[in-house]
Image 1: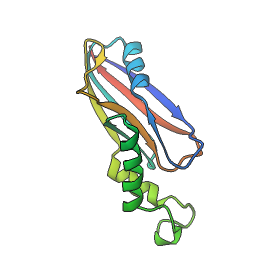
Image 2: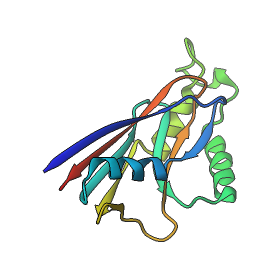
Image 3: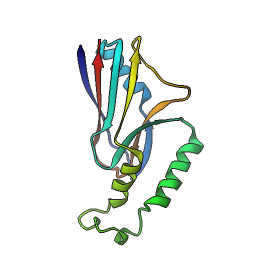
Image 4: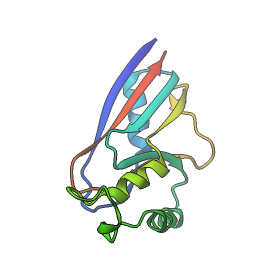
Length: 138
């Protein structure tokens, strides 16, 4: 069995943002040479998420509205965590959206269902962040 590791780097200019990273992950699969296996994609920061869903702008807006309803950014004083930083909402949003996703690799391609795409969701941007892509297989 072979393994391959790659990091994707992000520095979003806004506090929150959604990035479709499907092609980046597929490129890593191609670089790995692995034809049959699994790929793990995980956010390497506690205030960001990686997940799979549809790449539809209305849905992206729905995420933002829904997450702000669950864990509004402001007022910062509503959170005990906010003292040194003002990102308690980002930690909570990450918990809801998840840390990572795993996708099967079949014949050298991500083996998705209809409409599935991989997303990086930043909840506390304006600084350097990383995503790990780890591929194992043959």
